Length: 233
Image (cartoon, rainbow, N blue to C red):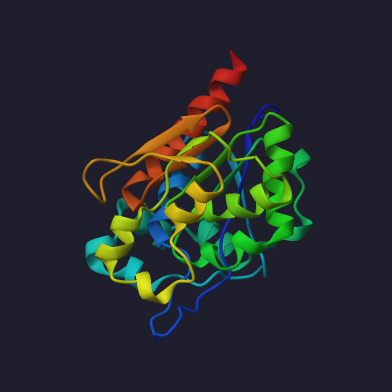
């Protein structure tokens, strides 16, 4: 299709937690749920990560109680699995080649993507080219570097991300360098969340589409698709 939309999904390359042997990485459902929303909408999806190759997967996201339908679909999808094994090196990606960018979570992004200048520039390039920027759960950590490169970028923006309450409930608050909700608020963002932890919540503020937690991953992708489709009208 000539007008087929192209989505760049950026995944973390970081797997180490602090002060524990527990591993982190990509929360699998936060990748697979949006991935299939984009695929089923007829979009082409390109995967990238800071180091390229296969991103680490948070082992907790592969436990039975956290498996989503999209996870199961992924296990039988050789095209998607191959793309996941061979993610592109993020610093080689250009906003001009895509229509939107999307950051899944897992705790990994609060280390690598939050501090990655090439990621921060990508976000700003997409945003200033009037292209949507989506992120879910800990994925909005990538917005930190964008705000450092362009002070005031997050000032007054309505966003959602994994909350301090949720961080406390999953028991990993002592194994991370900072609380994401607090850091984003310190940068001037207006944080919004569901009344009940771990239920879906999505915020759309112009071209910035963010979701709170794993259950928000698919809905955040749908909200980004809505923004893209409205541009066609």
